[in-house]
Structures are given as structure tokens and as C-alpha cells.
Image (cartoon, rainbow, N blue to C red; front, side, top):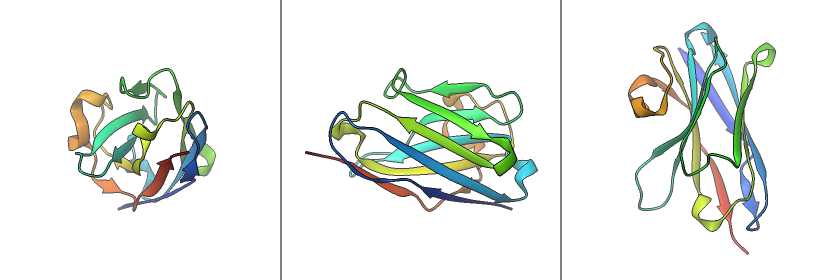
Amino acid sequence: QVQLVESGGGSVQPGGSLRLSCVVSGDTDRAKCLGWFRQAPGKQREVIASISTGRGNTYYSDSVKGRSTISQDVAHHTVYLQMNSLSPEDTAIYYCAAGSFPPCALRYGSSIYDNWGQGTQVTVSS
């Protein structure tokens, strides 16, 4: 089993930045893919970024591409999501997830993930 704990959410003004963190523990060898998802009120959960823990390949949704960076600290079993140029449309609960079966491309959605964190709230407003 893999446990994930997110942190770094909060309130930020439009145009601001946040860095979300997700600490992975337990059977970390099973975490072949690490992904960031978000769910806004009244909307479906969407995957926005993922990274393959072995090769370090990264993937981004169109909604965050160019203003977000997913990265990992292998030694500390932590995955980050740096988000810049935030807008109210980024307001959501952000979740990290671990999957055991790559490939980690976003087109596979949530189907490759079997462990989830509890989520962290991000609110963008003036």
C-alpha cells in the first residue's frame, strides 16, 4: 500500500503562485506514476500533470501547460506541483495519486492510479 499526503494549498490572488507537495510513503516502489488531479465544485475530477518516477517523463494537461511544473525529489519520496499565473479557474481541491502501472501519460486518466491523497484546497480570488 502507498500513502500520500498533500500540502501547500491555500488562498492566493490571481496571478500568484503556489507549490503543492505530496509526500509518498509505504510501498514506494509501487509508485511508478505520480499524478496531480484537481476537482472544482460541480466539475469532474481532472488529471493535470503526471510524472513517471523511473524515467522522469512529465505530462501536462492543456489547462496548466506552460505555467506549471511537476517534479520529484526521489530521495525524499516527494512530488511537487509548481503552479504560476493562477486564475480563479484554478480553484479546486488538488489531489496527488500513485499508480503502479505505467505508462503515465494523461490520456489514461485515473485508471492507472490506485492510491490517493486526501487533497489540499487551492482558492484563487481577489
